[in-house]
Image (tube, rainbow, N blue to C red):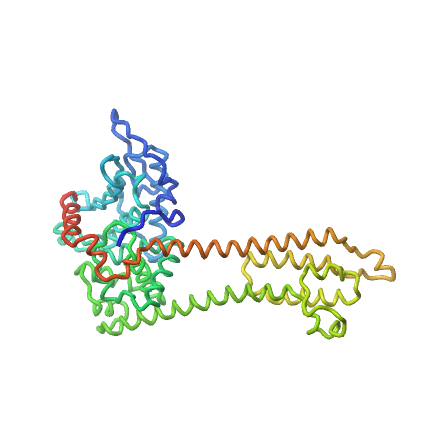
Length: 447
């Protein structure tokens, strides 16, 4: 299975920072030491980028941190003068890469995010690496002092990546679609499968989508103020967690089968909600278009007249002087109005344009003996202009819905079909190579 390379700009950290993936990185001035640019809270310091880009990245890191705090309902433990350093550099021979490094010194917690070739870096990889350091701060703050000096606790990838994948709405929506698609195909990841993902390589893998949905399940349940603390304490004790251990944290009972059952039932409910939503959207549009047609044979006031079985909005124009037309126009207006509660904002705007056309087609008669003289009855050209505006708005709305569907299909297509194959990730990124990567990062950590 191959990782995706096309970034999702709306959900990516670099896009939030305003750093275009196609913009070349500016070479640092080698004659002077680059100055660090701090975020407003001084929780993040950026080095190695031009000041404007460094400031934008610092602001984006603050935004991601704020989103994480909001999702967990817990402030990130930052101590004074212990920022996360985002150090950027260029290397013509290297790919884009983001590696989090941390250690405990006499000055306390030291964390650094080494960013190589920011212009080549997949934006989600940067977001996940930053989120990994942020989540580790929760663990370090509760870890006993003696244990911190020996080895800092680190969050497993299923948790840190899962939380990162919940920070932006477009990522959550995409991951939900992909995970539910695999569930419907009978190939979901179980709780045990997910808890085994302590390490995940760079790139966009379907396993990461499942981690995002898994974290959503864990933290979207009814409020449990002690859930996060229990999770952190368990991970400090051991970064490896079995399904029975998660059952104790989430359900407060030692039964792996129960937690697997709850996860499976939650996925089933999400799939049901998704199907209902899809049917509702399609049915709503179909019902709306059906209400744009008059059916004289079904209406007593004109059923005896020799008229077609149905009349479109345009076909009503030649009958605008008929005495029965106001009653027909009123029926159409009432029909469109009663559906208003089930329409989204875009379709409501389309509905209002058709209501304006119907009001002009059969204007109400002002009160008084000579009210008919004062009634405003627009000509055929004006009626066709109003109807054309409504028809064009409806066509644009339908095209927007098709564009959304195409975007979803394209996003899902970016995940290789190999994602469903068990062990595909391990074949692409062998366990020995993964461990070498982890060992290399550990050696570079400050002591």
